[in-house]
Structures are given as C-alpha cells and as structure tokens.
Image (cartoon, rainbow, N blue to C red; front, side, top):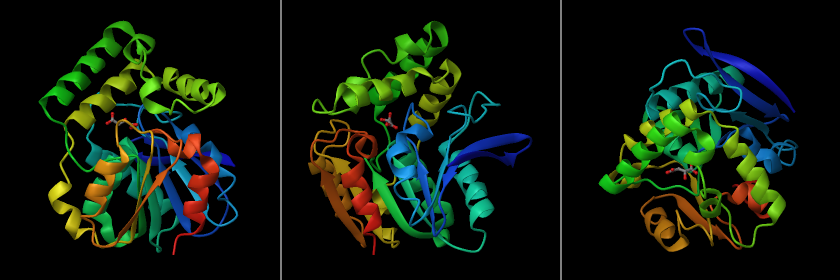
Length: 261
Ligand code: MLT
C-alpha cells in the first residue's frame, strides 16, 4: 500500500492511497472521513483489484485551495485519477454517502467509464430546506468554533450500537482530524447537490446498492425502495452495520465486492 499525489488541476493535487493490481476499483470516502474508511478493503481486496482511494479536497492528504467547490468538481477530480491509473479501461466505482453523491455526479458525466457502480450507505435525493439549514449551521460552527464542536455527537449516528469501542474511536479520530475549512466546504457542496431520483431509471451500469441494517441515515427500507428504481441493480443490507458498513463489517462488505459478476 502506498500514497501518491496526482495533479488534478492548476497546481492542486489529489492524495490517493493505492494497493494491489488488477481491474481498477475506486473507493470514494464519506464525510468527514478520508481513505482510512477503507482500511479493511485496501489490503484484503488488493489480491483481486487495483484498489485506489482518492481523498476529496481538504480531506486526508488532499489540499483545499478554494473555499468553495461543487460535487461536480469532485467528480472531475475522480476522472483525472481514473485516467492516471486506467486510461483505456472502465472502472468499478464505489462511493459511500458523500462518496455516493459524487458517484452519481460521476455517472452523469462519465457513464461510459464505469463497468460497475457500488452505491454504499448513500441516497440519490437532494436536501430539503431543513437539511440545508443544518449543513450551513454546521459549516458556520466549524469555521467559528472548530471541528470538535461542529461534529460533537455525530459519531453516534454513523456507527451501529453493536460496533465495538475501538472501531467507534477509530471513526471519531478520523473525523476529528478533518480541518474546519474542509468540513465547511464539504457541507456547503453537499447542501447544493443535485437530485438524482428522477434519473435512477437511466442508470444502466450494473449497480450494487449496499446499506447497513442499523444505518439511521440510509435505512434499509428507504434504500431498497430507491434501489428498485434502478434497471440493473441488486440490493444488500449488512446486519449489525451502521452508516460506515465497510469499516464496521469489512468481511461481509468485502465478500460482496469479491463476488461481483
Ligand atoms: C457521509 O457519511 O458522507 C454523510 O453522512 C453525508 C451527508 O452528510 O449527507
């Protein structure tokens, strides 16, 4: 496993953690996380895939040059990373939550570059007014009072009650390492994201939709309902997993990725 920096635009680079060889499997992390979300996948899936985990602007080792960006911009960064690793082959793209929102954007621009899509603990809908207000408030708290106060209590919404204390604190440490500026910029970008619900029937690429039985943000029933609108999708919910299913239940999650057809 190693980390590289890829120039994505005008002197700005994207930090990418890579392991293995084989067909390209790109894993997009959620908010406010980084490539460590995929710790349980990087080595285990490396025997079958070239596993590539880019970090979004401001997260992990990636720099944040502008205070604002859009999720479309992030999809553009993902495409630069894909071209670096597999310029002439389509890839398998997995995105968790915020990573899933970026995966929808990626599909809308670059569907031909996808062989499989994995939409993990995510949803296709845009925010309503209450959700937008909540995000803008968190962005403001982050800017004024810092990351720890902005994310206080958030980890309890992300991991299942049955997840052990070590994994819970691993997730929390990852969240706390996010800078206030990165937190704020991502919240603003997510608050402006597009709604893909009406476009679900157009997604022809084979898709696996995954959530966790204990995910309060993307519960199985609601997730299965939108997954059924995709023409070429399977749905799987992982027992005893919350919103961070690859971190909480790596064996069950990896089995799904090792058995893609
Ligand atoms: C995530 O895990 O990326 C977040 O839950 C996304 C969001 O805030 O909608």
